Length: 303
Ligand SMILES: [Zn+2]
Image (cartoon, rainbow, N blue to C red; front, side):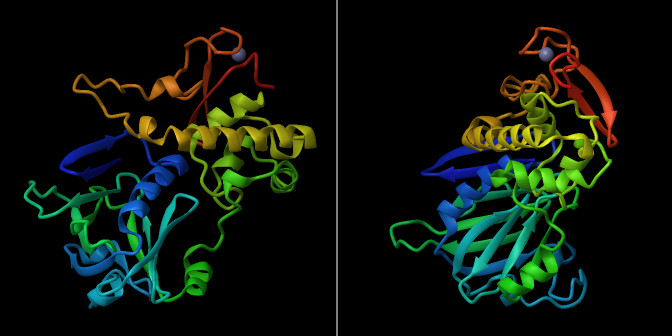
């Protein structure tokens, strides 16, 4: 997945290899919000109808461009879990899910660049300040696991598109986490990946938070004490906060021409470092498959 922003003729292009998680989506949200909030959508082009789920959740049939935002002012770009929530000033809006390979690009002015393939929707937006150039925001998703989901109102969005999502991982507290984990005999790793338990945690940050909290990923949820829950909640919050703040540098994990993964790994204590020394005890990190996902942890520091 990647995100590109062009500003003042300068092109910034970010790319990373794994599924976007909360910090990556939040970093994208901040850039998009900064550029498009308050802007008027002059025109929408839908190149692939089936990436858009209309208000009846259909991927087929007639789609009015007015429903995808044409003639609407963008009120805000928010985030819930790993989803972007674009609110129109009319109270309707759309959720953008990036899936495995989705990305959003924003380009200023006339688009003379080669049109990337898989550009499914393009919104032409006039920013609120007359001094700013018109921009084009595109949704690109080669594998099409992501999509654009339309809603009528905030209530419709909540009740239909955001149901079953647990509390935001960025603000989780120990007592709440203890309640959420206490009822499950699943592993901590599996519970953390479950979006109905906590919204926004994926494989990378589950491993990172468990290492910071000193908790073994295979421990069951109901074995966690209150002090351990408090430690884990603090580790989740701080891991995500640091990753969001480093958003630029994390996102700049472009795959280099030689196939290596740039500076991405240096931000992580465990993820992608199986066999390498633990930054806590210098012993080798181990890799297990837990909840069908590759899980890296320190057998000495995590109990
Ligand atoms: Zn260790």
